[in-house]
Length: 334
Figure 1: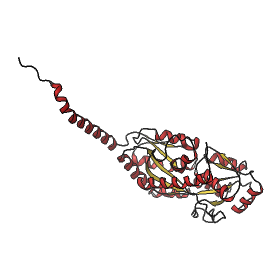
Figure 2: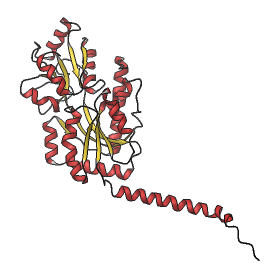
Figure 3: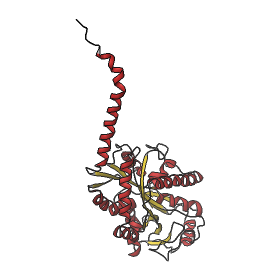
Figure 4: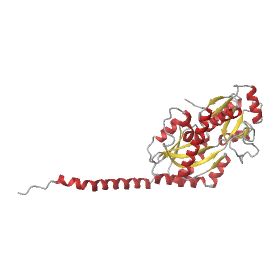
């Protein structure tokens, strides 16, 4: 009687082929899943409060993006902690394209230099998709403050040392840093008051409980035009087409002053390239729509819509810029 062959002897020979088959199947399944992306609702985390600049940008751009993708987009506001907790929630999500982050310079390029205990690494935590826009910030003061120009504001601050307060919609954001830069360049002292969102700060600005704010144009331009807030200057080194008679901070007597806000769409690190390309393609197309572009410009936000690589390079350059400034003024938040 012949003995049965030892099947186990064939396993070493079959294993490489088996592993290749399994790997090929996994890649095919992954490609199939990405090819049908998106097939369920997408959550876009905004790590700031309702009514903030970033939230306003999200409310303008996400509905048409949802239409283009054929899926619901849920805007999930997660304010607090300078935007770090909400951003951390996003970067720790599965890199499958169903959790994204629409954020600003603060969480993507600034906070790592300000907070000693950051929950994520700004340089490695994100998959860049596209820069949505750039934002003009504007220096606004309470109508109760007896100043009508930047030189008058500086003189008033020096005559009342430590008595002025300035608001921001979160510690570490460009709105906060704009105030810190003003203090440093003008040689004045002011108290920083943190609010969860610009509209909440506006209430105290109207009444004079706080004195000034370097706010983004999107949430403040309506109040400026209504006379509820007095605008003194814009913060970038060029004037705004929406307020062409308003000088830049440099023109108003603060040489070297230049602060530009921006917003961008990112995913967690490791987002598959096909998903990045789909999101980039659709988002850029949305930003080129006349209705979306016009609405953003009306709000003081200039549409951008660049490639993932260009956006990644922009974030890297912004980190270098803000890192240098923060080290120079010695600012730390914890």
